[in-house]
Image: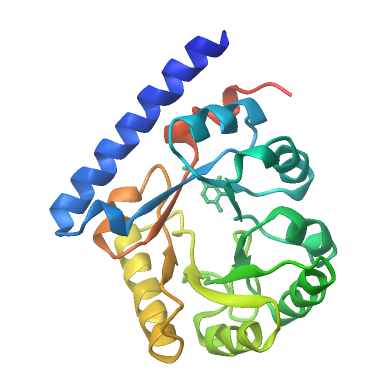
Length: 240
Ligand SMILES: *Cc1c(COP(=O)(O)O)cnc(C)c1O
């Protein structure tokens, strides 16, 4: 596909997403300015990030360091906000803090310590969201396939983030379970977020909602949508 054709496609996708967000905000009695769209560009090239930036999207999400690090380097001149949204191995913290502005997937104390140590060494700062596991089927104390801390462990993790120089607590993140009504999960996340904000008033971010459930997330109070397929297209169609 030519660059022009790809640009037209991304522009149309973005317009459709913006319409969906606007409709969901109107239905929920919320202002569109309350909800930010993060373009999750995993599996798609840096050229797409560049087009989306030109179309006005300033927030980019990635879920694997091996892919994100070179892409962020290629797009350094764009001055975008980079969100790391995937499960993060402790040994990747050193790389991630070099380009990420926000890590959405903080779900264990050891990761907090390592991010703090590495971000200070890099001379940078980082906003951390505590990822909450909302899957009722996962066993307590076991991090499920989609990651996230048990809701009961969120306050201690938040405190650990705030205690770490160079890290700031931004709020919470979750992925809705595959089964069931996502609104129930997003309500649970909102309750966790409200508790956290009572103690840390600056922790206002609720990262929830993807291509398939953005309306439910907007209805239930999200502040940051992580949108992949609806903006970029079907990842399964990409070869390589
Ligand atoms: C891929 C991904 C998304 C985007 O999902 P879509 O369904 O393509 O919108 C959101 N959040 C996380 C954590 C992801 O890994």
